[in-house]
Length: 223
Image 1: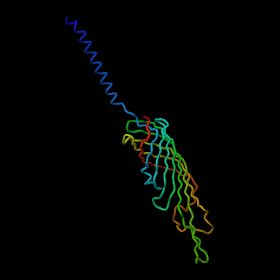
Image 2: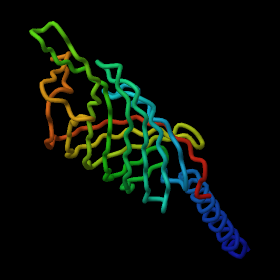
Image 3: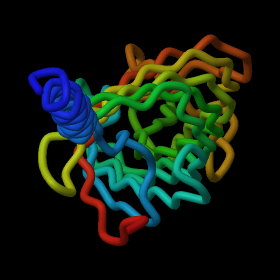
Image 4: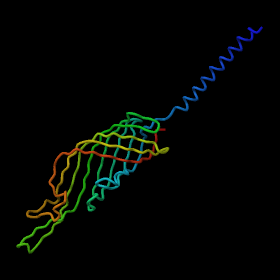
Protein backbone atom coordinates (compact mmCIF):
# COMPACT_ATOMS: atom_id res chain seq x y z
CA UNK A 1 0.00 0.00 0.00
CA UNK A 2 2.77 2.32 0.95
CA UNK A 3 4.74 1.40 -2.22
CA UNK A 4 1.64 1.99 -4.31
CA UNK A 5 1.47 5.65 -3.22
CA UNK A 6 5.20 6.17 -2.78
CA UNK A 7 6.15 5.96 -6.46
CA UNK A 8 3.53 8.48 -7.70
CA UNK A 9 4.42 10.78 -4.81
CA UNK A 10 8.13 10.56 -5.64
CA UNK A 11 7.38 11.24 -9.29
CA UNK A 12 5.35 14.33 -8.37
CA UNK A 13 8.10 15.65 -6.12
CA UNK A 14 10.78 15.15 -8.80
CA UNK A 15 8.61 16.75 -11.48
CA UNK A 16 7.91 19.74 -9.24
CA UNK A 17 11.62 20.14 -8.49
CA UNK A 18 12.56 20.04 -12.18
CA UNK A 19 9.85 22.57 -13.03
CA UNK A 20 10.97 24.89 -10.22
CA UNK A 21 14.60 24.65 -11.32
CA UNK A 22 13.71 25.41 -14.94
CA UNK A 23 11.57 28.39 -13.95
CA UNK A 24 14.34 29.74 -11.75
CA UNK A 25 16.84 29.35 -14.57
CA UNK A 26 14.52 31.17 -16.96
CA UNK A 27 14.12 34.02 -14.49
CA UNK A 28 17.89 34.31 -14.05
CA UNK A 29 18.44 34.26 -17.80
CA UNK A 30 15.85 37.00 -18.25
CA UNK A 31 17.53 39.08 -15.58
CA UNK A 32 20.95 38.61 -17.14
CA UNK A 33 19.80 39.48 -20.67
CA UNK A 34 20.54 42.99 -21.89
CA UNK A 35 20.58 44.97 -25.09
CA UNK A 36 24.19 45.63 -26.14
CA UNK A 37 25.22 49.23 -26.64
CA UNK A 38 25.39 49.54 -30.44
CA UNK A 39 24.89 52.21 -33.09
CA UNK A 40 21.43 53.63 -33.60
CA UNK A 41 19.87 54.82 -36.86
CA UNK A 42 20.61 58.51 -36.35
CA UNK A 43 22.28 60.44 -33.54
CA UNK A 44 23.49 64.00 -33.06
CA UNK A 45 25.99 65.20 -30.51
CA UNK A 46 28.11 68.03 -29.19
CA UNK A 47 31.87 67.82 -28.81
CA UNK A 48 32.81 69.15 -25.38
CA UNK A 49 36.53 68.89 -26.05
CA UNK A 50 36.36 71.22 -29.07
CA UNK A 51 36.13 74.20 -26.71
CA UNK A 52 39.51 73.26 -25.26
CA UNK A 53 41.11 72.51 -28.62
CA UNK A 54 44.13 74.52 -29.72
CA UNK A 55 41.86 75.77 -32.48
CA UNK A 56 38.72 76.11 -30.41
CA UNK A 57 35.12 76.40 -31.48
CA UNK A 58 31.75 74.68 -31.61
CA UNK A 59 31.67 71.19 -33.07
CA UNK A 60 28.63 69.02 -33.84
CA UNK A 61 28.66 65.30 -34.60
CA UNK A 62 26.24 63.21 -36.65
CA UNK A 63 26.12 59.42 -36.69
CA UNK A 64 24.22 57.27 -39.17
CA UNK A 65 24.00 53.59 -38.25
CA UNK A 66 24.06 51.36 -41.31
CA UNK A 67 23.83 48.37 -38.98
CA UNK A 68 24.07 47.86 -35.20
CA UNK A 69 27.86 47.52 -35.53
CA UNK A 70 28.71 49.70 -38.55
CA UNK A 71 28.42 53.46 -38.54
CA UNK A 72 29.09 56.53 -40.69
CA UNK A 73 30.22 59.52 -38.63
CA UNK A 74 30.57 63.18 -39.54
CA UNK A 75 31.94 65.95 -37.34
CA UNK A 76 31.71 69.59 -38.40
CA UNK A 77 33.00 72.53 -36.44
CA UNK A 78 33.23 76.29 -36.60
CA UNK A 79 36.54 77.67 -35.30
CA UNK A 80 36.51 81.18 -33.85
CA UNK A 81 39.67 81.36 -31.73
CA UNK A 82 43.08 79.90 -31.07
CA UNK A 83 44.38 79.54 -27.54
CA UNK A 84 47.16 82.10 -28.10
CA UNK A 85 45.60 84.07 -30.99
CA UNK A 86 41.99 85.27 -30.84
CA UNK A 87 41.85 86.69 -34.37
CA UNK A 88 41.42 83.30 -36.03
CA UNK A 89 38.37 81.81 -37.71
CA UNK A 90 37.71 78.81 -39.88
CA UNK A 91 36.13 75.36 -39.94
CA UNK A 92 36.95 71.67 -39.74
CA UNK A 93 35.26 68.51 -40.95
CA UNK A 94 35.96 64.89 -40.05
CA UNK A 95 33.99 62.18 -41.88
CA UNK A 96 34.72 58.55 -41.12
CA UNK A 97 33.61 54.98 -40.56
CA UNK A 98 33.36 53.08 -37.28
CA UNK A 99 32.91 49.41 -36.44
CA UNK A 100 32.03 48.11 -32.98
CA UNK A 101 34.36 45.33 -31.88
CA UNK A 102 32.82 44.90 -28.43
CA UNK A 103 29.30 45.74 -27.26
CA UNK A 104 28.28 45.52 -23.62
CA UNK A 105 25.24 46.80 -21.78
CA UNK A 106 26.76 50.11 -20.72
CA UNK A 107 30.07 50.13 -22.60
CA UNK A 108 31.14 49.56 -26.20
CA UNK A 109 34.41 49.80 -28.10
CA UNK A 110 34.90 50.61 -31.78
CA UNK A 111 37.67 51.03 -34.34
CA UNK A 112 37.48 53.50 -37.19
CA UNK A 113 39.23 55.59 -39.79
CA UNK A 114 38.64 59.30 -40.41
CA UNK A 115 39.54 61.94 -42.95
CA UNK A 116 40.73 65.20 -41.40
CA UNK A 117 40.36 68.67 -42.88
CA UNK A 118 40.84 72.00 -41.11
CA UNK A 119 41.03 75.44 -42.67
CA UNK A 120 41.77 78.55 -40.61
CA UNK A 121 42.43 82.15 -41.60
CA UNK A 122 44.18 84.93 -39.76
CA UNK A 123 44.71 88.49 -40.91
CA UNK A 124 48.39 89.45 -40.85
CA UNK A 125 49.74 92.96 -41.13
CA UNK A 126 52.66 93.52 -43.51
CA UNK A 127 54.67 96.66 -44.02
CA UNK A 128 57.03 98.22 -46.50
CA UNK A 129 59.36 100.99 -45.43
CA UNK A 130 60.89 103.27 -48.05
CA UNK A 131 62.38 106.71 -48.58
CA UNK A 132 64.99 106.16 -45.88
CA UNK A 133 62.37 104.81 -43.46
CA UNK A 134 60.37 108.01 -43.47
CA UNK A 135 57.30 106.36 -44.98
CA UNK A 136 55.56 103.09 -44.29
CA UNK A 137 52.95 101.27 -46.33
CA UNK A 138 50.74 98.66 -44.66
CA UNK A 139 48.90 95.73 -46.25
CA UNK A 140 46.54 93.19 -44.71
CA UNK A 141 47.24 89.67 -45.90
CA UNK A 142 45.17 86.59 -45.12
CA UNK A 143 47.36 83.75 -43.88
CA UNK A 144 45.58 80.47 -44.58
CA UNK A 145 46.45 77.27 -42.73
CA UNK A 146 45.18 74.02 -44.19
CA UNK A 147 45.54 70.67 -42.44
CA UNK A 148 44.42 67.52 -44.28
CA UNK A 149 45.10 63.87 -43.63
CA UNK A 150 43.78 60.63 -42.16
CA UNK A 151 43.77 58.94 -38.78
CA UNK A 152 42.95 55.62 -37.15
CA UNK A 153 40.67 56.02 -34.16
CA UNK A 154 39.64 54.03 -31.10
CA UNK A 155 36.37 55.05 -29.44
CA UNK A 156 34.63 53.98 -26.27
CA UNK A 157 30.93 54.57 -25.61
CA UNK A 158 29.15 54.78 -22.26
CA UNK A 159 25.40 54.77 -21.78
CA UNK A 160 24.43 57.63 -19.48
CA UNK A 161 20.69 57.71 -20.21
CA UNK A 162 17.93 56.08 -22.19
CA UNK A 163 19.07 57.82 -25.38
CA UNK A 164 22.16 59.61 -24.16
CA UNK A 165 25.67 58.30 -24.58
CA UNK A 166 29.13 59.58 -23.82
CA UNK A 167 31.95 58.98 -26.29
CA UNK A 168 35.65 59.22 -25.58
CA UNK A 169 38.00 58.73 -28.54
CA UNK A 170 41.59 59.21 -29.51
CA UNK A 171 43.23 58.92 -32.91
CA UNK A 172 46.67 58.74 -34.47
CA UNK A 173 47.44 59.57 -38.07
CA UNK A 174 49.37 61.57 -40.62
CA UNK A 175 48.43 64.96 -42.07
CA UNK A 176 49.82 67.62 -44.36
CA UNK A 177 50.04 71.17 -43.05
CA UNK A 178 50.39 74.07 -45.45
CA UNK A 179 50.40 77.82 -44.85
CA UNK A 180 49.58 80.11 -47.75
CA UNK A 181 49.00 83.79 -48.34
CA UNK A 182 46.05 85.39 -50.08
CA UNK A 183 46.83 87.58 -51.90
CA UNK A 184 50.50 86.84 -52.37
CA UNK A 185 52.84 88.87 -50.22
CA UNK A 186 54.11 91.82 -52.28
CA UNK A 187 57.80 92.25 -52.90
CA UNK A 188 59.78 94.08 -50.19
CA UNK A 189 56.98 93.67 -47.64
CA UNK A 190 57.71 92.14 -44.26
CA UNK A 191 55.47 91.02 -41.41
CA UNK A 192 54.92 93.43 -38.56
CA UNK A 193 54.72 90.54 -36.09
CA UNK A 194 57.96 88.62 -36.55
CA UNK A 195 57.26 86.12 -33.82
CA UNK A 196 54.06 84.76 -35.29
CA UNK A 197 54.11 81.05 -36.11
CA UNK A 198 51.96 81.82 -39.12
CA UNK A 199 54.90 83.47 -40.89
CA UNK A 200 56.59 80.14 -41.46
CA UNK A 201 56.32 78.74 -44.94
CA UNK A 202 55.17 75.19 -44.25
CA UNK A 203 54.13 72.47 -46.65
CA UNK A 204 55.09 69.22 -44.93
CA UNK A 205 53.69 66.02 -43.44
CA UNK A 206 53.27 65.77 -39.68
CA UNK A 207 52.00 63.08 -37.29
CA UNK A 208 48.72 64.03 -35.65
CA UNK A 209 47.19 62.92 -32.36
CA UNK A 210 43.58 63.76 -31.58
CA UNK A 211 41.33 63.34 -28.55
CA UNK A 212 37.59 63.85 -28.42
CA UNK A 213 34.91 63.92 -25.73
CA UNK A 214 31.40 63.91 -27.15
CA UNK A 215 27.85 63.68 -25.80
CA UNK A 216 25.26 62.42 -28.29
CA UNK A 217 21.52 61.85 -28.34
CA UNK A 218 19.82 59.05 -30.29
CA UNK A 219 17.04 60.64 -32.37
CA UNK A 220 16.05 57.55 -34.34
CA UNK A 221 16.68 54.17 -32.74
CA UNK A 222 16.75 50.66 -34.20
CA UNK A 223 13.62 49.64 -32.28
